[in-house]
Length: 365
Image (cartoon, rainbow, N blue to C red; front, side, top):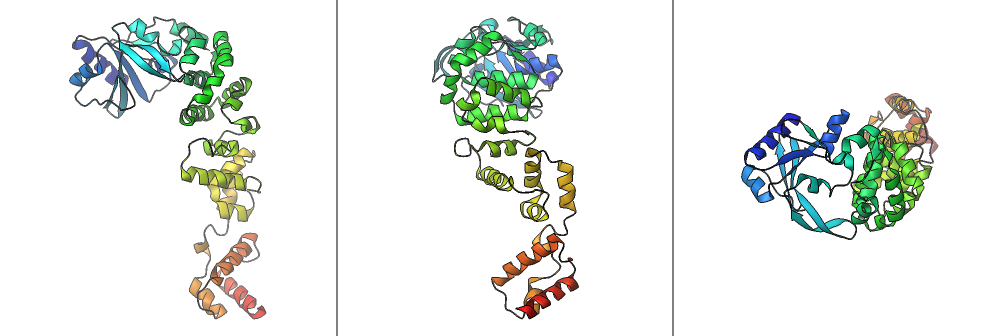
């Protein structure tokens, strides 16, 4: 990834423009972490970039940036700019292209995201980002209150970076969060969810959640049940317990899954009937939320005498013959009865045992 990135920089430099890797990739490189994509900043405009890279494209939602995919790596290449005006505490609605790297860096959120790398692999640190990286601190570029007022998403990004990197927030950032957090109410639920997902998936999730609660962001973000969650081992399990399906964006399948998780939560997930009806994944999620060893649940599931209705050793035709009935709705009731008896251990799942059981049941009726 780094080798390809440096080649891109060199190609842009050769055409007479400045270009640098910037932000997360450089930060992660210095920390020894891996990155999924690369951001590049340049003095070349999007039009000039597309003349350099014929296969680059301009995403509709990204004004002034081009996207380039090479060797299955996504590169965002953005022209140096100054953001002149923000709207709704979120999006810059007026920008101006500039030629200064330092002025471009001044518009960015946190100092640790202003670190750059040139085509020779040299680190360029114009705003003391490396110092904050070494101290393990999240500090905004310039006035924190202004930064969070311009774009309220930066508040959640501050929490997310502190969580994922296990860094502290600067005193200025902490004070600014307290005075600007109400702006988060105007942020889209999709944006909120994206950042919360990353916090919940972090190995340091407990720290991140403590920050959210300490600053009262659980109330602002309309996730008041956050403090009652004891396990964050499964993302869908967390969202199920937060019970915000009516506000936050989820697919129909995700909503159905969360509803099932909540329905199973009061049950004993080691009960054979519960495991059989709701399957291993849902029971494992609920088990983790309740502090039950997943291995114990998995073994219990493996040991079930049947896992599907088709595992029962008799066909619908066989049932009809034994009971001397034509196929009809009664078959469902018989199968439910057989499932319960087999799972409870009252009936062995062998055809002759099942036939005898049905014959005795038929004679009684």
